[in-house]
Length: 343
Ligand code: AAL
Image (cartoon, rainbow, N blue to C red; front, side):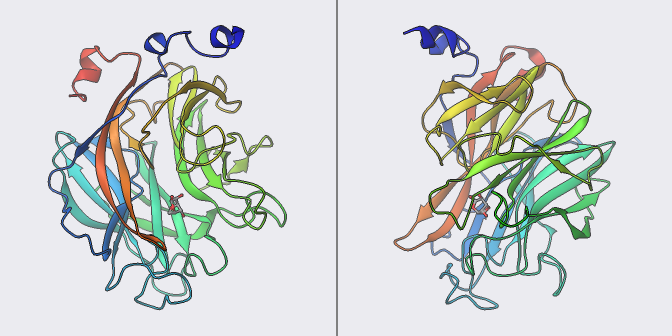
């Protein structure tokens, strides 16, 4: 009984600021008609607000066939839903109706890093410039595992043009460490005067262990990044969704692990504990976070964003669509500044 009073933000969910329900809405302007698996839109970035509009970036694949697994993949047949992909973007003035703007970051020519696929991007604004972090595949996903490091591109404007840095920004860990094969879902925030970039890895190669989330920090967007000695800092989760909350960082801990379907909180951005248990969480959520890059010591939370739904087939994931989610994970849902961005 005592843990209900000691371990959560409040004993009742309705008083717990990190408890919420989620509501989903179809987006207008993005095509939902293609259900044969040849077009996918998935893994949205955070939503940012610049030049009077919202921006979101996402993995976009358009291939002659749906994904067919690594054995059947070739230069045009994708192995996985995020194989042979590019990073596209869309803009919106109200968060519901979006205009697809096309490619932001294309696959670079061979042999540049990421020539097989660039996917699962997230955005950082730092000292007036924009930095995009993403998974760069130089072989088809699934050839051994879902192996890739993190690459980056930068731009003066969210409309681009983006310049690709043809080097690994967050490298895989040394042999026999938890992140030796993959660094997925890079997720940068500005916290404690630094770039705090959370990411997923999966202990792949050891089937007894599961996916978890780690942290790498840097003073410069293009590195070097230092991995936290306590990694992995979150025991569970898949596509990590984090945001500044009061003095710390909150995390939607989605999909994998025994502590999935929880929202966790770390006062110091590192030592996460369960703050609430929720249901129907947004998959791969990219929230609109007004204070993601303001170095806040008093994070205000989130009320909406973009997430994806995956259409599973018998053998693989064949395509995904983007949707909007709404929630109340904000301390100021009635604040006029927050209301401007929330419907
Ligand atoms: C997603 C993410 C990463 C993986 C793949 C595409 O769920 O975790 O981006 O590589 O699946």
